Amino acid sequence: MRATILGSAAGGAFPQWNCGCPGCSNVRAGAPGWTARTQDSLALGADGERFVLVNASPDILVQIARTSWLHPRSPRHSPIAAIVLTNGDLDHVLGLFSLRESWPLAIYATASVWRGLEESLFLRTLRRFPEQLAARRLVLGEEVELADAKGSPLGVHARPFALPGKLPVHLVGHGAASPEDNVGLGLRGERGPRIAYAAACATVDEAVRKELASHDVVLFDGTFYREDELVRLGLSRSVAKDMAHVPIDGPTGSLAQLEGLPGRRIYTHVNNTNPILGPTEERRRVEAAGWEVACDGMAALA
Ligand SMILES: [Zn+2]
Image 1: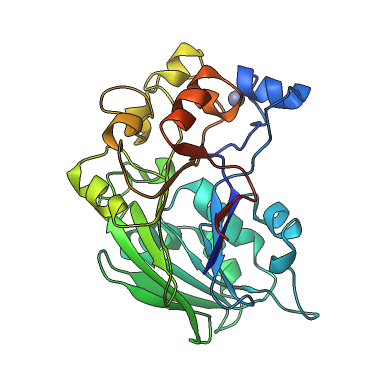
Image 2: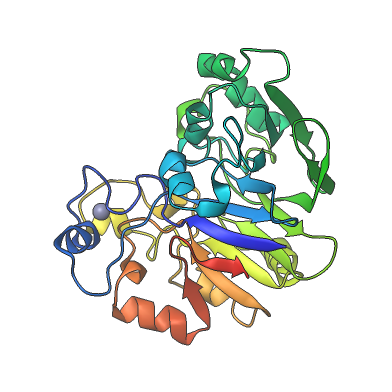
């Protein structure tokens, strides 16, 4: 199985269109060591021909355009055979609506994420003909072999696991919270290494740690470095906890809580305010602890 990080930034991308924080300003100025990033998405495949996307970022068209193996092989074709959604956050679902030019899509999500999507009138754009959307349901703890829209298996297995999280902002107060609102994924081919994808995680408890420890590569929530990162920069009154993202730093942060985790560890879904995006003291600390910082195009599995 091959897996490539298509996008490594949190919602808003890097730089964010309306942000003049130090990181975003450094990218715009072309400062050494600061690299632009698109919004979080992972592509993986087992047969070299058909690929699975984990989440559909608003930057999906750019991500496809710059990734040659995601280009069409014939006049009306896409190697994207299935899309798995890990929550209903806009930075993970808006890309779906860019894939509307009459190509059959298989989309996997939990019942809770489906409920949120069904509220959107835009979903009708993916249902212009009967077979356009194969909507498949994921259930916590149950591994499935992913298949294309016609049902042909892709050689990629996915198992959703519970992660502390929350409803997407636009649905808060609109429905009851469920453990299926935000999931992690265990991903594997028929053989070889296993990847854990956990791009949004509110706290690291023993269950989360145990789950991650059973994988060879861990992609983990690197949204914020500090709990009060947005407050310090004067950008928001919300702390990381309000947005259901465990920060990297601090005694309950992911760096401390996931210390000694075996295998390869990569911070992804990194917010543009996070200092690990540049050549900073925070970046050196994270790397010294054995973590990598995702960038667009990085191979999670070669
Ligand atoms: Zn910024």
